[in-house]
Image (cartoon, rainbow, N blue to C red; front, side, top):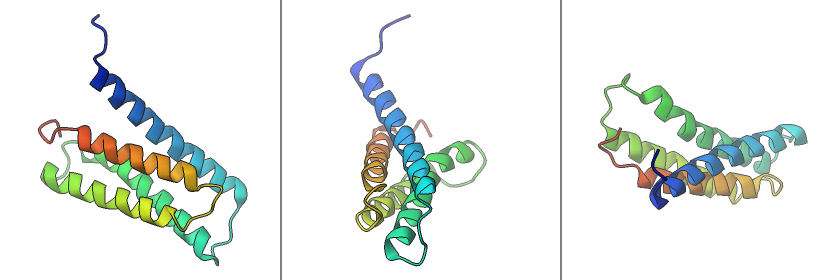
Length: 117
């Protein structure tokens, strides 16, 4: 077995950090039992849902939808950008994990060549 090249290691680290920070953000958010009457609670929930969509949608996409990969990448980048923007207004306890997850997933998406999808 050959050793991993640096881009492969970066790809794996970004993928793992994005998924783990998203899981940690959901756990912290659920543990806080936030009020959805506040803007911060709603913004955090929107950011978490957008980031979760970005993580889950490529798995659902694989060979099942007629979208071109370019549209998929643009849509995922739009959801990631939404997650980053609303995380600025989210709850401060969840904000760092939400930002780290969204940024690492954006960088991960930009590393994937369209031909792979």
